[in-house]
Amino acid sequence: MKYQFIVFMIFGFILTAKGQETIPERFITEIKAQEGTWIADNSKYSEDGIERFAIEWTLSPLKNSLYGRLYGINDNIEIGTFWTFHKYFDTSKNKVVLMQIGYNGSLGIGTIEYKNNNESILTQTFTDPQGNSRLEGHKMTYPNDTTEIGSSYSINKSGGWTLKRTYTWKKSL
Image 1: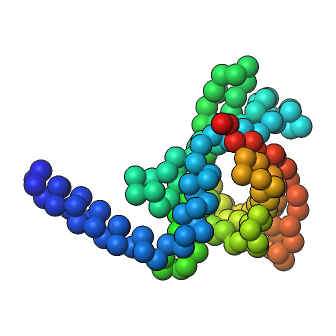
Image 2 (image 1 turned 180 degrees about the vertical axis):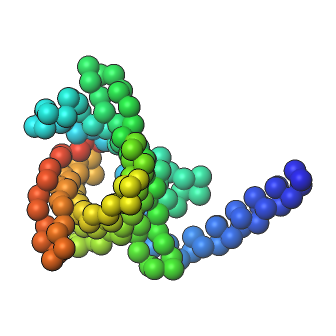
C-alpha cells in the first residue's frame, strides 16, 4: 500500500509538472510578486469590530499557484481566519481561477480577467451552505509592487455592479 501511494505521488507530480508548460509567464510572475502578507486598514467599516485585515499568500510547492487566507487583526493579535483561497491557472479554460471557502462554509469560485498591466477584474459566484447563490465582483488596481487597491461589488441579475467596499492593501516587507 505504501508503495502504491509513492508511485501515485510521483506520477501525479510528473503530470502536474508537465502541465506547467502551458501556464503563462505573466501569471507566474504575478503570483511570485503576490506571495507574502498584505495588510488593509478596516477602520472605515468599524461595524465589523475588526481593526485590520491581512491576506497571507503562499506559493504552492511547484510555484505555479497560490494558497491564501484572509484573517482579522485587533490590537496586533490575529483573531481568526475568515476565508481561505486557492489561485491557479486553469489550462483547460485558459483562465486564472480564484476559489475561496469562508468560515461559514460558503464557496466562491470565479475567473480573473486582466485589463492592462495594473488592473484586473474578478467575477465570482458564491454559494452558501443552504444553496443560495449570488454573483460578486472585485476590481483591483496595482499602483506599485507593494500596493493593491481592491473594491468589492455585488452584481445584480441584469449585470449591474454596486460598490460594497474598497480596501488599500500594503505588502508587509
